Each structure stands twice: as C-alpha cells, then as structure tokens.
Image (cartoon, rainbow over all chains, first blue to last red; front, top):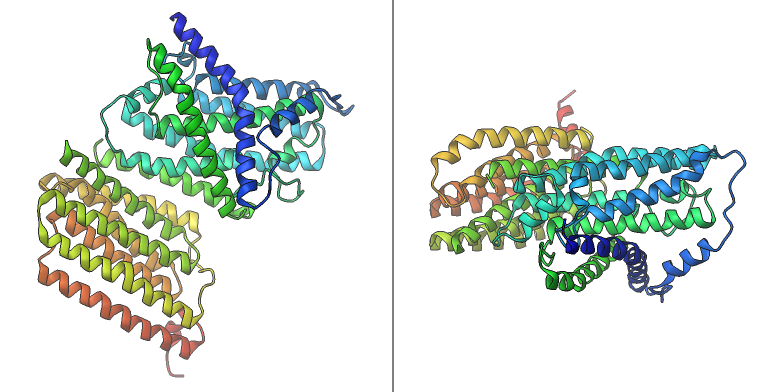
Length: 315
Length: 220
C-alpha cells in the first residue's frame, strides 16, 4: 500500500460522493432538453439534498429501528461499491477487499435492507414496491454476474482492478463476447437503476412506480441519504460499464500524472454516457411490469451467449 | 497485426449476427422484425467484404454486392409493401412464450457450437471460429419458423435462415462457387415473390394470415 494508492483511493471516494448528484442532474437536464423543456439545471440534485438535510425527519410511530437504520446501510453499501470500482486508478488499497462477486453482493445487501424497510411500516405501497424490487433484483443479479464473468474470462480474474488492467493496458483487441455483454449490461443497469423501460424515475404515479414506492415513507435526512445513494448507485453502475467496456484512461500504479489526466477523461466519458442514457430513455416507452422478467431474461441470455461465444472463439 | 484485427472484427460481426438472431426470436412486432432482418443483411455484407479483403478473393465482393442489393434493399422493400398492403403491423402471437423460446435458443446455440467445433478444427479459414455461430443462426431461424403462427414472420425466418447459411458458407469455405450463389440469390428472390402472392391468397381464403387455418383445409 503506497501513499499514492491511499491518495487515489480517497480521491475516488470523494469524487464519487460529489459527482454522483451531478451525473443525475446532467441526465435529467439532457432529458429535459430532448423533450423541449428548459430543465431544472445541473445543480438541482444538490439543492434537493441541501433542502432535505435541513428538514426534520418524520418517522411513523410503528417504525422499528430497521427503518431508521436502512438509509445509512444503503448509503454505506453504495459508497463502498463506488470505492472498489476502479474509476481513476487501478492502484486501490480497498480493491482486494471485494471482487466482482462481492460487489454484486453489496448491491444485494442494499436491496434487501431497502425492501425490508419499505415493508416495515406496513403501508401497501411500500410492500408492493418491495415485491417489485425483489422481482427485478433476483432476475437482474444473475445477469449482472454473467456480464462480469464474461469480462473475467478474458482476464482470468474476478478482481475488478485486474480486469480493468488487462482490458486497458493490452494491445488493441476486439472481444465479441464483450459486445454481447455490453448490451446485456445496458439492459441490467436500466432495470437496476429504475430507468425508463422498467421504471420511470420522474413519476410518482402509484401503479407504475418501483423505486419511488420504496422510499415513500421517508423524509428529511433519511430521504436525502436514500436519494444520494440512488445517484451513487447510478454513478457506480456507469463506472462499472466504463471500466469493463471503455477502460482507456484509467491510471496505473505509480503514475501520478496519469491520475491527474484520468479525472477529466472520466468526466468526459460520464458526460457522454449520460447523454446516451437520456437519449435511450427518451426513445423508449415504459413497459408493463409483466414484460420486465422477459426483458431481464433476454439480458441474462445475452450475457450467457457472450460467455459461450468467448469459449467458442477461444479468446 | 492487421489480419489479426480483421479476424477479430469478423468474430465481432458474427457475434452481432447471433445477437440479431436472438433479437428476432424475442421480437413481437412485424415491422421491427423487418428492420432486424435488414440489419442482419447489412452485417452479412460487412462480414463478407471483410473476409474478401482479408483473403484477397474478389468474387466475395461480388457476392457481398448481391447480398446488399437483395437482402438489404430489395427484400425489405418488398416485405414493407406486403405488410402495408396486408395491413399487418400488429403484434405477432407466438406459439411458445418468449422466455421459453429463448431458453430453447440457448440450448440450440450450445448444440450448434459443439457440432461445429470438430469441423472448424479441420478448416484453415480465417473465420473458422464463426462456423458455430453461423450454424446457431440457422437453427435459431428454424425455430423462429416453428414457433410463429403467422405467415409473414415465418417468411422472415426463412430468409434469415438463408442469411445464416450464406454466412456459414463464407466463414467455412470462403463462399460458394459463383454459379451456385447466383442461383440461390435468384431462388430467394423468386421464393419471396411467390410467398408474397401466397400470403395474399391465404388472406383472401381465410381472412387471416394464421397458418393453422391451412390444417383445416378439406372438403366436407
């Protein structure tokens, strides 16, 4: 563990915490532009967090300690997830703590706690939100694992930093399996982050919401933490996508100058990714909840085919 | 280095071809099916051109040209006309539900890969690894013809099966002899014309394009 490693680790966590709301703001702004609206501005998520942190948090008298604790657990999971994904540098002291499988487990822990908390106060909306979240989660998790395994097959390791090192610092090669895995990953992350074809993040319409139903009972600082965690999750997923499919520009160990360069490169990549996500969301219509299993089954199968193709083509 | 990159590009195109085959299986709308078929044709053209470039076989350029004219421009145009005239843009009913179809599809892909493995070991072609994918595309199109009950998706399945066969021929043996290729191209074109006429007749007789009506065709 070097001083530079610690520095890049800290920089990465701070950057994830600070930039995650900006990414959400950027995507919402792009969506607004695409729909001929003026939009709320890039800084709206920060204003929202500021407002919520300064408000009193009202909690139902029937709520158990689980309900109070869940926002902190969820936020902690997402912050840790953003810390172990190599976004700026592959020299991360925290990265041996968790590989790709543990990362998926981390997301699962957050999902379980938010679902339990939603059912805790006993409102019907919370319960159905939790059930839908679990329905999506249990289908999305294997697909995400398969996507990560496709990348692992290339680098022969499930550690994210090793995967990124192998993919980024090898001579130029095209991996057909990653093309399939990329499509599958896009579908999974749309479902996991409650984006348009699966859930609409902009609506509170009771019958269609999933993510909003889960956090309906929260207010004040708890809601702020959950909103922040949601944007961190989106940030983490975008960074996994960038790390697996567009890993160029990530700094290696013992390269302080590359670390400086990695930040603008990452911001540029995230900005482009945000535009594409907004475009995708504008172009597609929300599907019925009963079509979601089909959507995620397709993602899973594409990822499996990706693995099969990589075995067949021997790469 | 260059030929290595071309080989990888061909593999990538093969993977996209397989992905499009799966997309066709899971697609419910006829219009999107035609778009996917057009995309499949375009990928096929690119793959043929690349194989031709990598192996210096000029006749592959000709077959790529034929594919472009026939499968990317002419047949999709004809199909668009047919569905406009028949007014069938609605969702397609499948006989087996779509997740089930896709699981069977995975099994077919594994089967095809295993089948192709010993064959591609014998081949010295640059695209030998893609034979399994081509075979999988053929089998998937077969399955699409079986699981769809309406005439238009069946015809598209037939055409996409021909795409798979063409890709198999290109990847395993650098294309068929010119005479055979021209013959097949003509066959496909005539086939689609006849099938088009046939569809109009089915519709006239039964007021529907559901093939199952044909089973009841007997004098009583």
